[in-house]
Length: 206
Image (cartoon, rainbow, N blue to C red; front, side, top):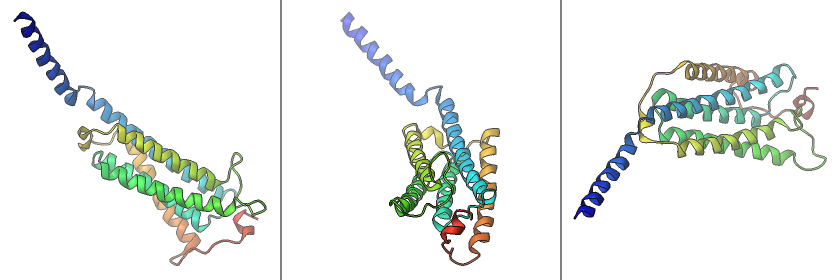
């Protein structure tokens, strides 16, 4: 009888412990960590696009239509993650980010395939030995892996809408600025019509 009582009490304590996991006191810390990772990825992607602008305006490397589409893909990934910061972390927001990453990665892979043949003209100026479209493909792959990690860390408690802290606000403003700059630069290259592919001499800044 005594052993039954001890076993029964132990079972009750175990059930309470399991139920309390859904309300673990570290949930707010996990939510803040997830939001910080979202903001960090946004800032990294914005930095990548800014580096492309450096190549465009300071190295005189005009973007091709595929390059512009890859920039839009990175902005799409950043937009999905920014929705997490503004309206709470949701699976649909990660879905938008993943869709943008897959499309952007496919476009980058397409451009790699266009220039991978021996003797085929190289597009642009290499950065650390790799072309910008190759770096773009690597960035999209890293974005996909990062979002998958965030999905593993997802919990329903992260859905609550929270005010932006300074780091998240910085990511938000950086995304707004890069989006406006992208609209302006795309208009400069394409106007209101379809973007025209560049001759090789212009694409390498000669």
